Length: 220
Figure 1 (cartoon, rainbow, N blue to C red):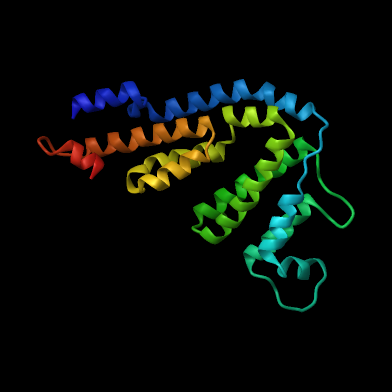
Figure 2: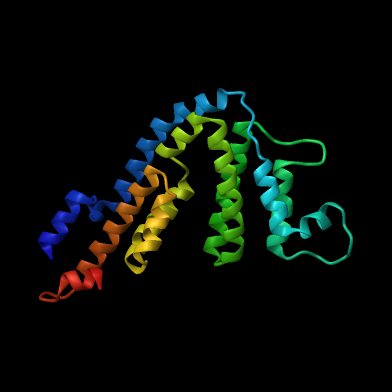
């Protein structure tokens, strides 16, 4: 077990200093990404959010239309109501929000909403918000290569924490699910998955009595 633990320290970062390692990596990546984000925000190229608005309308229809033009006194469910409210972040009958920096602020707000939904166990709401987030990021990345580059270096605190949790649970996932999850992540997020996996392996090793099959304990 000791030899395996030492090997993990060299290859997946030392889980004994897990929190320090995560904080240091996040801070380093944020410093590198910050000027690239600022360069992206200086661009005046508009972001096409048509796909984001269409996705919201398609997801909650006819709910969102009833919110905009009430046809009954029935209240929508909480997820539909939230998406209807979010639609107003992006577009009204008169205007669309197309500024990259402004949309980045909206994206950060959505990050927080996703975190709240996940912590409360509201998977339905979390999935709905993630669907909006993915399409928003796709539009922002398309409008600004610099924004896409900055996100590859550092996304957000929420996304880093989420990637860590994926890493901690990676040994409970099927191989296809792991590949699918990793394929949609930025390099920074994949690095956090590695750290989460290191933590999970180290904890499994530490929980074994001397003489037990450590490899079996780790990989099942």
